Image (cartoon, rainbow, N blue to C red; front, side):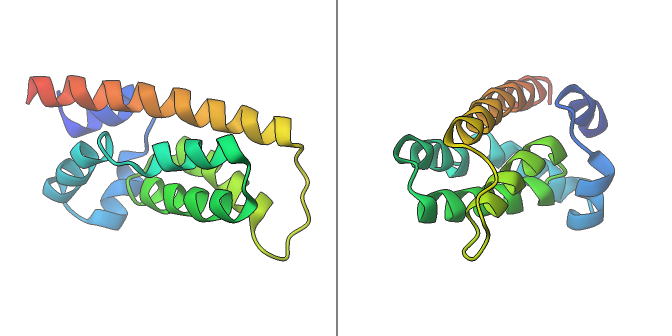
Length: 123
């Protein structure tokens, strides 16, 4: 499996990752690390307490990591939570809607981690 095939399988944007990281070697290195990165687990944990500060910080971290890797759907979901809890912003989502996004992030992260594991098994 190539990196491009991996990105198709996980609904990522390979070209975005290439624009940021500039070479396949770095994309490969960082996408492999992503499946073991605790940043998504930390966001989901923050969602259990619904602590606004933690949700902002952890969602912002997920947004940054996933945007750099071209994981645009995950990044978009994390961005919604980031903006929801950005200091000074008015809330526009209910707690239930935030929890729905967190569930979507969890599901998409699991799919992405499985895709990366399959990629690792083939390379």
